Image 1 (cartoon, one colour):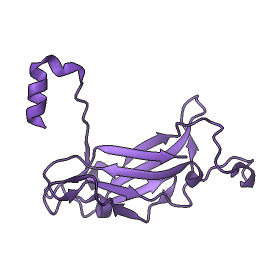
Image 2 (cartoon, one colour; image 1 turned 30 degrees about the vertical axis):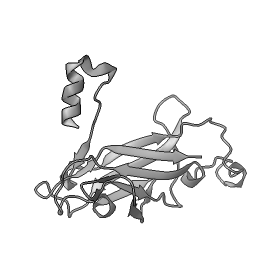
Image 3 (cartoon, one colour; image 1 turned 90 degrees about the horizontal axis):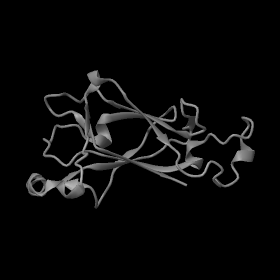
Image 4 (tube, helix red, strand yellow; image 1 turned 60 degrees about the horizontal axis):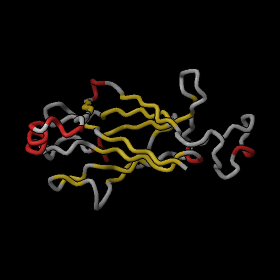
Length: 166
């Protein structure tokens, strides 16, 4: 990858900007907080759940808006004791603690290490409105490295957050 980048830079970058970002965390880093917006039409059809909710008809159940959440770490050589996303993260989605994180099989593998995990959205997770003047709704996500993670062994790394909505 570095060799390709050097070759492309010799030609002026060929119009591409290298925008790779990875975030690293240990327990002392504190939680990483994100707001994942629902990017569909505001009146999307989510199976008539609006009428079944007791809070003024607003459907707040995250699973009625979002299907999946995938987290991936950067493609880099990491030791055996380095943070592993499927076991070393404490995650809260829409105010609910995540109870199930599984490694993704057959994709997202680098040097025999699985780099992506499927984070199952808890049934009790709720969507919220953005903290701005828009009417955007979305999912709050809070990610914290657990006590097992150390800087010496290898911090947790997140390079991609992918969400699917209906």
